[in-house]
Every structure is written in C-alpha cells, then in structure tokens.
Image (cartoon, rainbow, N blue to C red):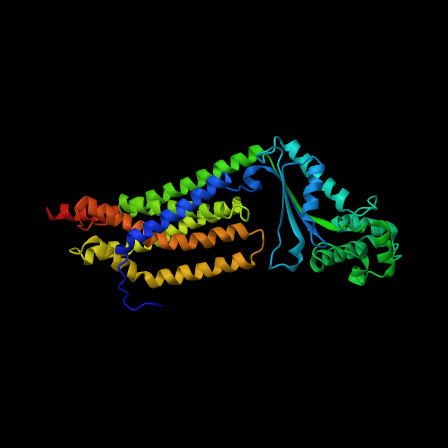
Length: 416
C-alpha cells in the first residue's frame, strides 16, 4: 500500500529545522524539569502510601486535605482521578502520603502506619455515624456469607452455608458492578440473587453504608522505591547499549551511534513532556515499560531506513550521501506512515479510553511514537550525513555488515 507515488522530498535540506525543533523541545523539557524540581515519580519509585477512594457524591477535596492534616499527615497530595471512560469513577480521589517533606517514607512500618492513619481519618470524617457496624461497601464475600448464615434470614437451616455464599457473591457483584463499589441504600440490592425483604432487613441491621469506598491501597518502602528507580535507569541504558552493539555490527559504528543518539533523544523529549505536565502524569513502572517499548520501536524504524540506505549505496555508488538518504527515506515513507499511523491511532485510543491506570503509559506511548518516527529521518539520518561529509567531503560511505565484509574478504582471497 502506497500513500505517495514516487515521492521526492528533500529531507536533508531541512535538517537544520529538525535540529531546531528538537532543541526547542529538549529546552522546554529542561526548563519544566528545573521548575518542578525533577520528574514526578509515582509510588513505585518514590515510596509512600497511595490510596484510591471512590465517593458516593462529589468528593470534598478541601475537606479531605484538612482531615489528613488534622491526622498528622501534613505531606499529602489529594487529586481527583476521574476517568471519562468509566462513569463510576467520576468521584474517584487519589490520596498520596509521604513521611517527610520530600515525599519519602522513612520505614515500611511508618508506611503501614500512614496507610492506617489515612483510612482512620477517612472513616472518622466521612464514615457513617453508626461506626460500630462494619461497612458493607468494604465487606468481603466470606464476611457477608458468615453473617447471613448466622442470621439465616431465609430460614434455610440446613445447607445454609452454600446458599448464603452464593447470595453474598451476588450482592457484592451487584455492588461492585452496578453501583461502582458504593451502595447508598440497601434497597438497591432488593431481588439480587433472591435477596428478599428479610435479607435486606438483616443487612440493614448488621451493616452500615459509608459514603466512600477504598478501591485499593498501596504501600512501597523507600528502599524498594530507590532500588526500582535505579534498576529502571539501568534497564533503559542496557537497552540503548544493546541496540548500539547490534546496529554497529549490522551496519557500521556511525549508524549505530546515530540510531542510539536518536533513541536517547526520543526518551529525553518524552520525559520532558512528563515534566511539562508534571501534575497530570507520573513516572511509574508502566511508564518505564513504555519507554523501553519506544526504544525498540524507534530503533526498528531507523533500521528500516538504514537498511534501504545500504541497498541504495550499491546501486547509487556515485551519488552523494544526502541524495541516497533522501531516496531511502522517500522509498520507505509509505511504510513509515502506515505503521506509525496505525500505532499512533492505537495508543491514542488507549490514552482516551484506557482508564486512569494506563493514562501515564499511553501518554508516553503517544508522545514516543510521534517523536520516534520523526527522529528516524530528522535526527539519525542527518547525523550520518554530517559525519560522512566531515570524513569524506560528501563521498558515500559503504554500509556493509560484518558478514558482508567477511564474504568480500573470502572472495578477494579466492581471486588471488
């Protein structure tokens, strides 16, 4: 499939514009990083306590902050975490807590204490006044089943355990599926799994209904967070080093160097966008996975162009390197638009509809796919041209692989 018929764009004459664009993006990212004091690390790397809470109505962000401050959790961050793809999440709130001014937790025991303090503060300020009863919205299937078995509102007597377990599963399923994890009135459960008036009355008598539900709570120690951050950096650097070695062996060292510089450029610009939108996206393990994916994606696109350059060098030996590079990029242009366009469409839809959990991951992929595609012809290719002109004053450079060189050497020996 071809979008262009015999395109003849002079890409290399625009190299200075590509360099200017990259320089501006890198500078903006650097300024944003300095302004915000670095990247916004998630709980995976920073260490601390993170609690996702869903409220029955619009969450009182200010009151939540005051409640946490009153509980002694001065270093807290409360943000709305709604997701347009999930109507139930419109009242979700993300609560992040650290133990000191830098957002780091001193020990795992302190983290667990912070987690319990958060839950206690929420219960005290936003829970049901009849706190002597357990919260149905937080109750698990076994607890509800045991309670109903003891009360036996259906008067089953024998074999009541299995029946009430099934009923508890139906009730919690309706709670989580139909009501987003928050039931505001027990009558909403009438008829679910055969829940009659007696069952509803028993639930009202034994459980309360809080105005919020804790969806998940995560605790990461400072030592683990620092270790994960270090390993993430090493993983990215190892990936870049491996790509350099591969491309240098497959072509020549200048091509490997140019490809790795382009990929490094992609990673820096993507991180720069994370600094620019500091309050909206954080660096987590899923973002590191996205960056490593982008390393391979951008490198693959660059290798496709370099491979076509190698083929054209054998057919256009007398042509200068900029002409060969332009021809190679134009010949692979339809392929680039097709693959990059489909990839971008996929990750963009993931960004829009993928939910809050995948928001940072998909954001990194959206930025990375665009920058990675552009860097293949806007950064990597011009580097090769610049080096070629500096070394040979415009002469072409053979892009033979190590296997090709060995074959040529054997052929020359046989001729002698």
